Amino acid sequence: MKLWSKGFEVNKEIERFTVGKDREMDLYLAKYDVLGSMAHITMLNSIGLIANDELPVLLKELRSIYDICEKGEFVIEDDIEDVHSQVELMLTKKLGEMGKKIHSGRSRNDQVLVDLKLFTRAALREIVEETKVLFDELIEKSEQYKEVLMPGYTHLQIAMPSSFGLWFGAYAESLTDDMLYLQAAYKMTNRNPLGSAAGYGSSFPLNRQMTTDLLGFDSMNYNVVYAQMGRGKMERNVAYSIAGLAGTMAKMAFDACLFNSQNFQFVKLPKECTTGSSIMPHKKNPDVFELIRAKCNKLQSLPVQVTLIQNNLPSGYFRDLQIIKEVFLPAFDELKDCLRMCAYIINKIEVREDILDDPMYDAIFSVEEVNRLAAEGMPFRDAYKKVGLDIEAGNFTPNKDIHHTHEGSIGNLCNDRIKALMEDILKNFNFEKVDEAVNKLISTGATE
Image (tube, rainbow, N blue to C red):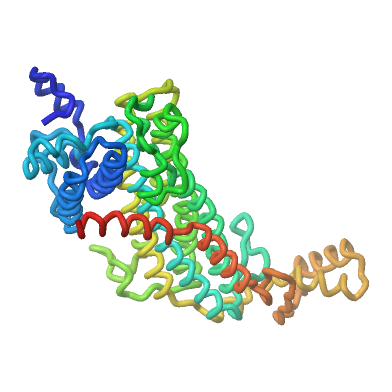
Protein backbone atom coordinates (compact mmCIF):
# COMPACT_ATOMS: atom_id res chain seq x y z
CA MET A 1 0.00 0.00 0.00
CA LYS A 2 1.31 3.41 -0.98
CA LEU A 3 -0.53 6.60 -0.08
CA TRP A 4 0.69 8.12 -3.34
CA SER A 5 -0.17 5.15 -5.60
CA LYS A 6 -1.63 6.07 -8.99
CA GLY A 7 -2.27 2.57 -10.35
CA PHE A 8 1.15 1.62 -11.75
CA GLU A 9 3.86 -0.63 -10.34
CA VAL A 10 7.23 0.77 -9.30
CA ASN A 11 10.33 -1.20 -10.28
CA LYS A 12 11.09 -3.55 -7.37
CA GLU A 13 14.75 -2.58 -7.13
CA ILE A 14 13.84 1.11 -7.15
CA GLU A 15 11.30 0.43 -4.42
CA ARG A 16 13.82 -1.51 -2.32
CA PHE A 17 16.39 1.27 -2.67
CA THR A 18 14.01 4.16 -1.95
CA VAL A 19 12.29 2.54 1.02
CA GLY A 20 15.68 1.60 2.47
CA LYS A 21 15.52 1.14 6.25
CA ASP A 22 12.35 3.19 6.64
CA ARG A 23 10.23 0.30 7.92
CA GLU A 24 12.82 -0.47 10.58
CA MET A 25 13.32 3.17 11.56
CA ASP A 26 9.60 3.95 11.55
CA LEU A 27 9.04 1.48 14.38
CA TYR A 28 10.63 4.14 16.61
CA LEU A 29 7.91 6.55 15.48
CA ALA A 30 4.82 4.33 15.50
CA LYS A 31 3.10 5.42 18.71
CA TYR A 32 3.92 9.04 17.99
CA ASP A 33 2.34 8.74 14.56
CA VAL A 34 -0.82 7.54 16.31
CA LEU A 35 -0.72 10.45 18.79
CA GLY A 36 -0.32 12.93 15.95
CA SER A 37 -3.27 11.36 14.13
CA MET A 38 -5.45 11.54 17.24
CA ALA A 39 -4.77 15.26 17.58
CA HIS A 40 -5.20 15.86 13.85
CA ILE A 41 -8.60 14.18 13.53
CA THR A 42 -9.83 15.92 16.68
CA MET A 43 -8.96 19.18 14.93
CA LEU A 44 -10.56 17.98 11.66
CA ASN A 45 -13.76 17.33 13.57
CA SER A 46 -13.73 20.91 14.88
CA ILE A 47 -13.67 22.27 11.32
CA GLY A 48 -16.25 19.84 9.95
CA LEU A 49 -14.03 17.41 8.03
CA ILE A 50 -14.68 14.53 10.45
CA ALA A 51 -18.29 13.96 11.54
CA ASN A 52 -19.26 13.97 15.21
CA ASP A 53 -20.27 10.31 15.07
CA GLU A 54 -17.03 9.36 13.30
CA LEU A 55 -14.57 10.99 15.71
CA PRO A 56 -15.12 8.70 18.75
CA VAL A 57 -14.94 5.60 16.54
CA LEU A 58 -11.66 6.73 14.98
CA LEU A 59 -10.17 7.77 18.32
CA LYS A 60 -11.06 4.45 19.90
CA GLU A 61 -9.41 2.49 17.09
CA LEU A 62 -6.33 4.74 17.15
CA ARG A 63 -6.07 4.17 20.90
CA SER A 64 -6.17 0.44 20.21
CA ILE A 65 -3.26 0.82 17.76
CA TYR A 66 -1.42 2.97 20.34
CA ASP A 67 -1.75 0.14 22.88
CA ILE A 68 -0.30 -2.28 20.32
CA CYS A 69 2.69 0.07 19.92
CA GLU A 70 3.14 0.33 23.68
CA LYS A 71 3.29 -3.48 23.93
CA GLY A 72 5.98 -3.58 21.22
CA GLU A 73 3.70 -5.56 18.90
CA PHE A 74 3.30 -3.00 16.12
CA VAL A 75 4.53 -4.35 12.77
CA ILE A 76 4.91 -2.66 9.39
CA GLU A 77 3.97 -5.27 6.81
CA ASP A 78 6.38 -6.12 4.02
CA ASP A 79 4.34 -4.52 1.24
CA ILE A 80 3.59 -1.40 3.26
CA GLU A 81 5.82 1.61 2.65
CA ASP A 82 5.99 3.30 6.05
CA VAL A 83 4.37 3.79 9.44
CA HIS A 84 1.83 6.31 8.12
CA SER A 85 0.58 3.84 5.52
CA GLN A 86 0.45 1.02 8.09
CA VAL A 87 -1.67 3.00 10.56
CA GLU A 88 -4.05 4.10 7.83
CA LEU A 89 -4.29 0.51 6.54
CA MET A 90 -5.12 -0.80 10.02
CA LEU A 91 -7.87 1.81 10.33
CA THR A 92 -9.41 1.10 6.94
CA LYS A 93 -9.35 -2.66 7.59
CA LYS A 94 -11.40 -2.07 10.74
CA LEU A 95 -13.49 0.97 9.78
CA GLY A 96 -13.63 0.99 5.99
CA GLU A 97 -13.86 4.29 4.15
CA MET A 98 -13.89 6.25 7.41
CA GLY A 99 -10.24 5.34 7.98
CA LYS A 100 -9.22 7.09 4.78
CA LYS A 101 -10.37 10.47 6.10
CA ILE A 102 -7.53 10.92 8.61
CA HIS A 103 -5.08 12.21 5.99
CA SER A 104 -7.14 15.27 5.03
CA GLY A 105 -5.11 18.46 5.49
CA ARG A 106 -1.85 16.54 5.96
CA SER A 107 1.14 15.46 3.91
CA ARG A 108 3.53 12.70 4.88
CA ASN A 109 6.00 15.57 5.17
CA ASP A 110 4.36 17.25 8.14
CA GLN A 111 3.25 13.87 9.46
CA VAL A 112 6.83 12.63 9.78
CA LEU A 113 7.88 16.04 11.10
CA VAL A 114 5.43 15.83 13.99
CA ASP A 115 6.34 12.16 14.59
CA LEU A 116 10.01 13.09 14.84
CA LYS A 117 9.25 16.01 17.15
CA LEU A 118 7.14 13.84 19.47
CA PHE A 119 9.67 11.00 19.48
CA THR A 120 12.61 13.32 20.09
CA ARG A 121 10.78 15.19 22.84
CA ALA A 122 10.12 11.92 24.68
CA ALA A 123 13.63 10.56 24.02
CA LEU A 124 15.24 13.75 25.34
CA ARG A 125 13.20 13.44 28.50
CA GLU A 126 14.55 9.92 29.04
CA ILE A 127 18.08 11.22 28.49
CA VAL A 128 17.47 14.00 31.02
CA GLU A 129 16.23 11.50 33.60
CA GLU A 130 19.20 9.15 33.10
CA THR A 131 21.60 12.10 33.24
CA LYS A 132 20.12 13.11 36.59
CA VAL A 133 20.74 9.58 37.93
CA LEU A 134 24.41 9.82 36.91
CA PHE A 135 24.63 13.33 38.37
CA ASP A 136 23.30 12.09 41.73
CA GLU A 137 25.82 9.24 41.81
CA LEU A 138 28.68 11.66 41.12
CA ILE A 139 27.56 14.11 43.81
CA GLU A 140 27.21 11.29 46.32
CA LYS A 141 30.70 10.01 45.56
CA SER A 142 32.08 13.56 45.71
CA GLU A 143 30.70 13.97 49.21
CA GLN A 144 31.80 10.49 50.28
CA TYR A 145 35.42 11.08 49.25
CA LYS A 146 35.75 14.84 49.71
CA GLU A 147 38.59 14.42 52.23
CA VAL A 148 40.60 11.97 50.10
CA LEU A 149 43.45 13.69 48.27
CA MET A 150 44.79 12.70 44.87
CA PRO A 151 47.30 14.24 42.46
CA GLY A 152 46.12 16.79 39.97
CA TYR A 153 47.83 16.79 36.57
CA THR A 154 48.77 19.20 33.83
CA HIS A 155 50.56 17.90 30.70
CA LEU A 156 50.23 14.45 32.34
CA GLN A 157 52.78 15.67 34.90
CA ILE A 158 51.92 15.77 38.59
CA ALA A 159 50.90 19.36 39.31
CA MET A 160 48.97 20.22 42.49
CA PRO A 161 46.91 18.45 45.13
CA SER A 162 43.40 17.59 44.07
CA SER A 163 40.78 15.39 45.71
CA PHE A 164 38.27 12.77 44.72
CA GLY A 165 35.66 15.20 45.94
CA LEU A 166 36.84 17.58 43.22
CA TRP A 167 37.17 14.86 40.58
CA PHE A 168 33.69 13.39 40.99
CA GLY A 169 32.18 16.85 41.54
CA ALA A 170 33.80 18.25 38.39
CA TYR A 171 31.95 15.75 36.21
CA ALA A 172 28.73 16.42 38.11
CA GLU A 173 29.00 20.14 37.33
CA SER A 174 29.90 19.34 33.73
CA LEU A 175 26.55 17.56 33.48
CA THR A 176 24.75 20.79 34.45
CA ASP A 177 26.15 22.47 31.35
CA ASP A 178 25.21 19.42 29.29
CA MET A 179 21.71 19.65 30.77
CA LEU A 180 21.43 23.24 29.55
CA TYR A 181 22.22 22.04 26.03
CA LEU A 182 19.58 19.33 26.41
CA GLN A 183 17.08 21.93 27.58
CA ALA A 184 17.78 24.18 24.60
CA ALA A 185 17.38 21.19 22.27
CA TYR A 186 14.14 20.21 24.01
CA LYS A 187 12.66 23.70 23.68
CA MET A 188 13.57 23.93 19.99
CA THR A 189 12.07 20.48 19.47
CA ASN A 190 8.86 21.22 21.37
CA ARG A 191 7.21 23.25 18.59
CA ASN A 192 4.42 21.97 16.39
CA PRO A 193 4.96 21.57 12.61
CA LEU A 194 1.60 19.85 12.01
CA GLY A 195 -0.53 21.73 9.48
CA SER A 196 2.41 22.77 7.32
CA ALA A 197 1.47 19.86 4.98
CA ALA A 198 4.07 19.52 2.22
CA GLY A 199 5.68 22.73 3.41
CA TYR A 200 3.27 25.27 1.97
CA GLY A 201 0.18 24.94 4.15
CA SER A 202 -3.32 23.82 3.17
CA SER A 203 -6.48 25.32 1.70
CA PHE A 204 -8.43 23.59 4.49
CA PRO A 205 -9.15 25.97 7.41
CA LEU A 206 -6.85 24.05 9.77
CA ASN A 207 -6.69 25.06 13.44
CA ARG A 208 -2.99 24.65 14.12
CA GLN A 209 -3.22 26.13 17.61
CA MET A 210 -5.63 23.37 18.53
CA THR A 211 -3.23 20.56 17.56
CA THR A 212 -0.44 22.46 19.29
CA ASP A 213 -2.42 22.44 22.54
CA LEU A 214 -3.65 18.86 22.15
CA LEU A 215 -0.09 17.55 21.78
CA GLY A 216 1.36 19.70 24.58
CA PHE A 217 3.73 21.69 22.40
CA ASP A 218 4.98 25.03 23.73
CA SER A 219 4.16 26.72 20.43
CA MET A 220 3.97 25.94 16.74
CA ASN A 221 6.48 26.41 13.97
CA TYR A 222 4.52 29.35 12.66
CA ASN A 223 5.82 29.73 9.12
CA VAL A 224 4.92 26.60 7.14
CA VAL A 225 8.02 26.82 4.94
CA TYR A 226 10.22 27.07 8.02
CA ALA A 227 8.42 24.10 9.56
CA GLN A 228 9.59 22.03 6.61
CA MET A 229 13.06 23.60 6.69
CA GLY A 230 13.29 22.45 10.31
CA ARG A 231 13.64 18.84 9.15
CA GLY A 232 17.30 18.06 9.66
CA LYS A 233 17.92 21.26 11.60
CA MET A 234 16.06 19.93 14.61
CA GLU A 235 18.04 16.69 14.46
CA ARG A 236 21.32 18.60 14.14
CA ASN A 237 20.55 20.80 17.16
CA VAL A 238 19.62 17.77 19.24
CA ALA A 239 22.71 15.93 18.00
CA TYR A 240 24.91 18.69 19.39
CA SER A 241 23.29 18.29 22.81
CA ILE A 242 23.86 14.54 22.62
CA ALA A 243 27.48 15.10 21.61
CA GLY A 244 28.10 17.44 24.55
CA LEU A 245 26.84 14.89 27.04
CA ALA A 246 28.75 12.10 25.31
CA GLY A 247 31.92 14.21 25.50
CA THR A 248 31.63 14.47 29.27
CA MET A 249 31.23 10.72 29.65
CA ALA A 250 34.04 9.91 27.23
CA LYS A 251 36.48 12.10 29.18
CA MET A 252 35.39 10.60 32.50
CA ALA A 253 35.73 7.09 31.09
CA PHE A 254 39.28 7.84 29.94
CA ASP A 255 40.18 9.16 33.40
CA ALA A 256 38.71 6.06 35.02
CA CYS A 257 40.63 3.71 32.70
CA LEU A 258 43.85 5.58 33.47
CA PHE A 259 43.25 5.72 37.23
CA ASN A 260 42.34 2.01 37.30
CA SER A 261 45.63 0.93 35.69
CA GLN A 262 48.44 -0.55 37.79
CA ASN A 263 50.63 2.46 37.04
CA PHE A 264 48.16 4.71 38.85
CA GLN A 265 46.07 2.47 41.14
CA PHE A 266 43.89 5.39 42.20
CA VAL A 267 40.61 3.52 41.84
CA LYS A 268 39.52 -0.08 41.72
CA LEU A 269 36.61 -1.64 39.90
CA PRO A 270 34.87 -4.57 41.59
CA LYS A 271 35.93 -7.78 39.84
CA GLU A 272 32.35 -8.45 38.73
CA CYS A 273 32.52 -5.19 36.74
CA THR A 274 35.62 -6.23 34.78
CA THR A 275 36.46 -8.78 32.11
CA GLY A 276 39.46 -11.06 31.64
CA SER A 277 41.97 -12.15 29.04
CA SER A 278 42.00 -15.46 27.19
CA ILE A 279 45.79 -15.75 27.68
CA MET A 280 46.79 -13.54 30.65
CA PRO A 281 45.24 -14.90 33.87
CA HIS A 282 45.95 -11.78 35.91
CA LYS A 283 43.93 -9.38 33.76
CA LYS A 284 40.87 -7.48 35.04
CA ASN A 285 40.04 -5.13 32.19
CA PRO A 286 37.88 -1.98 32.53
CA ASP A 287 35.91 -2.87 29.40
CA VAL A 288 32.80 -1.01 30.54
CA PHE A 289 34.62 2.32 30.64
CA GLU A 290 36.45 1.53 27.40
CA LEU A 291 33.18 0.82 25.60
CA ILE A 292 31.56 3.92 27.10
CA ARG A 293 34.50 5.93 25.78
CA ALA A 294 34.23 4.42 22.29
CA LYS A 295 30.44 4.67 22.05
CA CYS A 296 30.46 8.25 23.33
CA ASN A 297 33.22 9.22 20.91
CA LYS A 298 31.09 7.76 18.12
CA LEU A 299 28.08 9.76 19.35
CA GLN A 300 30.17 12.92 19.14
CA SER A 301 30.28 12.40 15.37
CA LEU A 302 26.47 12.57 15.15
CA PRO A 303 26.20 16.34 14.50
CA VAL A 304 28.67 16.02 11.64
CA GLN A 305 26.77 13.11 10.10
CA VAL A 306 23.47 14.99 10.25
CA THR A 307 25.05 18.19 8.92
CA LEU A 308 26.67 16.44 5.96
CA ILE A 309 23.36 14.81 4.97
CA GLN A 310 21.29 18.00 5.09
CA ASN A 311 24.00 20.53 4.28
CA ASN A 312 23.37 22.85 1.31
CA LEU A 313 19.87 21.55 0.60
CA PRO A 314 17.57 24.36 -0.60
CA SER A 315 14.20 24.96 1.04
CA GLY A 316 11.54 22.33 0.53
CA TYR A 317 11.52 18.57 1.08
CA PHE A 318 14.11 16.15 -0.30
CA ARG A 319 14.43 12.41 0.16
CA ASP A 320 17.97 12.90 1.47
CA LEU A 321 16.39 13.71 4.83
CA GLN A 322 15.15 10.13 5.18
CA ILE A 323 18.74 8.97 5.78
CA ILE A 324 19.07 11.17 8.86
CA LYS A 325 16.66 8.85 10.68
CA GLU A 326 19.14 5.98 10.32
CA VAL A 327 21.85 7.74 12.36
CA PHE A 328 19.60 9.86 14.58
CA LEU A 329 16.88 7.60 15.97
CA PRO A 330 19.11 4.78 17.31
CA ALA A 331 21.49 7.27 18.95
CA PHE A 332 19.18 7.78 21.93
CA ASP A 333 19.20 4.10 22.92
CA GLU A 334 22.98 4.00 22.71
CA LEU A 335 23.32 7.15 24.82
CA LYS A 336 20.84 5.87 27.42
CA ASP A 337 22.78 2.61 27.66
CA CYS A 338 26.03 4.51 28.26
CA LEU A 339 24.42 6.72 30.90
CA ARG A 340 23.00 3.74 32.78
CA MET A 341 26.26 1.80 32.71
CA CYS A 342 28.21 4.88 33.72
CA ALA A 343 25.93 5.50 36.73
CA TYR A 344 26.13 1.83 37.72
CA ILE A 345 29.92 1.64 37.55
CA ILE A 346 30.42 4.97 39.37
CA ASN A 347 28.24 3.62 42.17
CA LYS A 348 30.49 0.54 42.45
CA ILE A 349 33.90 2.18 42.06
CA GLU A 350 36.32 2.02 45.00
CA VAL A 351 38.78 4.79 45.82
CA ARG A 352 42.28 4.38 47.23
CA GLU A 353 42.77 6.70 50.19
CA ASP A 354 46.58 6.67 50.72
CA ILE A 355 47.79 7.79 47.30
CA LEU A 356 49.72 10.86 48.41
CA ASP A 357 51.66 8.94 51.06
CA ASP A 358 53.98 7.88 48.25
CA PRO A 359 57.00 10.27 48.18
CA MET A 360 56.88 10.36 44.37
CA TYR A 361 54.02 12.83 44.82
CA ASP A 362 55.81 15.13 47.32
CA ALA A 363 56.55 17.78 44.70
CA ILE A 364 52.85 18.54 44.16
CA PHE A 365 52.87 20.31 47.51
CA SER A 366 55.43 22.86 46.23
CA VAL A 367 52.78 25.45 45.42
CA GLU A 368 51.44 25.15 48.96
CA GLU A 369 54.92 25.99 50.27
CA VAL A 370 55.34 28.91 47.84
CA ASN A 371 52.00 30.31 48.97
CA ARG A 372 52.92 29.84 52.65
CA LEU A 373 56.15 31.81 52.21
CA ALA A 374 54.35 34.53 50.23
CA ALA A 375 51.69 34.79 52.96
CA GLU A 376 54.50 35.33 55.48
CA GLY A 377 55.79 38.29 53.45
CA MET A 378 58.32 36.89 50.99
CA PRO A 379 57.77 38.19 47.42
CA PHE A 380 56.04 35.47 45.37
CA ARG A 381 58.79 35.23 42.75
CA ASP A 382 61.45 34.86 45.46
CA ALA A 383 59.39 32.19 47.19
CA TYR A 384 58.91 30.38 43.85
CA LYS A 385 62.67 30.43 43.20
CA LYS A 386 63.56 29.23 46.70
CA VAL A 387 61.18 26.28 46.62
CA GLY A 388 62.30 25.36 43.09
CA LEU A 389 65.96 25.30 44.14
CA ASP A 390 65.11 23.25 47.25
CA ILE A 391 63.36 20.66 45.07
CA GLU A 392 66.32 20.49 42.65
CA ALA A 393 68.72 20.06 45.58
CA GLY A 394 66.59 17.35 47.20
CA ASN A 395 65.95 19.54 50.25
CA PHE A 396 62.17 20.00 49.88
CA THR A 397 60.02 18.63 52.72
CA PRO A 398 56.32 18.89 51.92
CA ASN A 399 53.65 20.02 54.36
CA LYS A 400 50.67 17.85 53.43
CA ASP A 401 48.21 19.64 55.69
CA ILE A 402 46.02 21.29 53.05
CA HIS A 403 43.72 24.20 53.89
CA HIS A 404 41.82 25.49 50.85
CA THR A 405 38.70 27.47 51.67
CA HIS A 406 37.63 29.42 48.57
CA GLU A 407 34.56 28.42 46.59
CA GLY A 408 34.96 25.27 44.55
CA SER A 409 38.28 24.22 46.09
CA ILE A 410 39.33 21.11 48.02
CA GLY A 411 37.90 22.43 51.26
CA ASN A 412 34.76 24.02 49.83
CA LEU A 413 33.36 21.91 47.00
CA CYS A 414 30.13 23.91 46.58
CA ASN A 415 28.23 20.69 45.86
CA ASP A 416 25.11 22.24 47.37
CA ARG A 417 25.24 25.02 44.78
CA ILE A 418 25.89 22.55 41.96
CA LYS A 419 22.85 20.55 43.06
CA ALA A 420 20.73 23.71 43.20
CA LEU A 421 21.89 24.67 39.72
CA MET A 422 20.84 21.27 38.38
CA GLU A 423 17.44 21.51 40.07
CA ASP A 424 16.81 24.95 38.56
CA ILE A 425 17.60 23.65 35.09
CA LEU A 426 15.34 20.61 35.53
CA LYS A 427 12.38 22.74 36.60
CA ASN A 428 12.49 24.68 33.34
CA PHE A 429 11.80 21.64 31.15
CA ASN A 430 8.14 21.70 32.26
CA PHE A 431 7.53 18.04 31.47
CA GLU A 432 4.24 18.21 33.38
CA LYS A 433 2.58 20.22 30.61
CA VAL A 434 3.37 17.53 28.06
CA ASP A 435 2.20 14.74 30.39
CA GLU A 436 -1.12 16.47 30.99
CA ALA A 437 -1.81 17.02 27.28
CA VAL A 438 -0.77 13.56 26.10
CA ASN A 439 -2.57 11.73 28.89
CA LYS A 440 -5.74 13.66 28.14
CA LEU A 441 -5.48 12.88 24.43
CA ILE A 442 -4.93 9.16 25.06
CA SER A 443 -7.69 8.92 27.64
CA THR A 444 -10.10 10.56 25.21
CA GLY A 445 -9.49 7.72 22.80
CA ALA A 446 -10.00 5.17 25.55
CA THR A 447 -13.30 6.52 26.90
CA GLU A 448 -15.11 7.42 23.73
